[in-house]
Image (tube, rainbow, N blue to C red; front, top):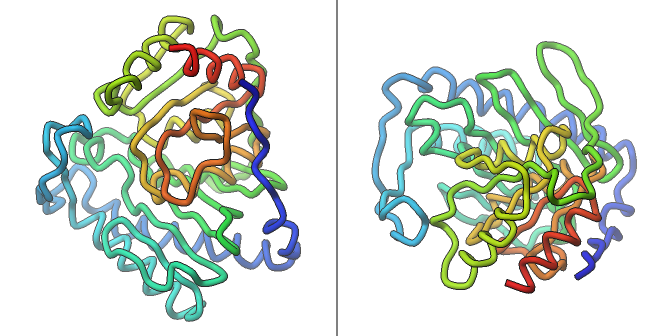
Amino acid sequence: MTAQSPDRPAVEQLSAEQFGTLDGFLIELNDAAAREILPLFRADHGLVDKGGDPKDGGGGFDPVTEADKGAERAIRTLIAQRYPDHGVIGEEYGEDRPDAEFVWVLDPVDGTRAFIAGLPLWTTLIGLRFNGKPVLGSIGQSFLDELYIGQTGGSRLISHGESRPLKVRTCSDIGQAIIATTDPEIFQGKERDQWRAVRQAVRLARLGCDAYAYAMVAAGTMDLVLEAGLKSWDIDAAIPVVAGAGGHVTDWQGQPVGAHGGQVAIAGDRALLDAALALLSAA
């Protein structure tokens, strides 16, 4: 199965000046989120169990912390002040004008389970849609001082006061690939057989990295990520980061990821993505 290219018209309607302004604001949003999150990491974070679906791999445990809520509030406040006509879709506080021309899609702490376990694999995901298409996004790991930010014209890592471009690595042989998923328990029914088919074909698999694995594909240290049951806030921010680094994000049929998430395949090398999709289809 050959992956289809996401369509780009929405991106082409934004000028370099607009991208520059929005890029700078995206950095501001990450800084505001970090100020809320970091004092609570490995500290009293105010854990509450929202009570999840056992099918999500957490046994019905769905944690939220004051870091999640405080960071999203801070991000929403800045957006409302700077761009009051923009919409917002967030994990913690729902939708506000989701059909606006510009819509910010937020997951303030993706990987809350890692966060409460003291593992620095959680991230802050902030994406921007323009006319319904993800055009700008960031994957922030503020404890490590890492901000992966990108659009289809290019992606970069900002860390410790320096910036460097991101580029996926070449890995066309699935037998040499390093892959990841958050937790195999998220896969339901046939999805489990599909995951196993790919897992058995690769060199190495890592689990529990959440969206940090998406950043590693963009950075060229991992090759493939498979996920299922994602929400829009789990994936929107990563699409421009991976694409800007030369990678690919599709669903398991090789089509652009829909507005509501679902099954997702993220790969650095197009040939590797095609090989993985073929195994998913055959399983």
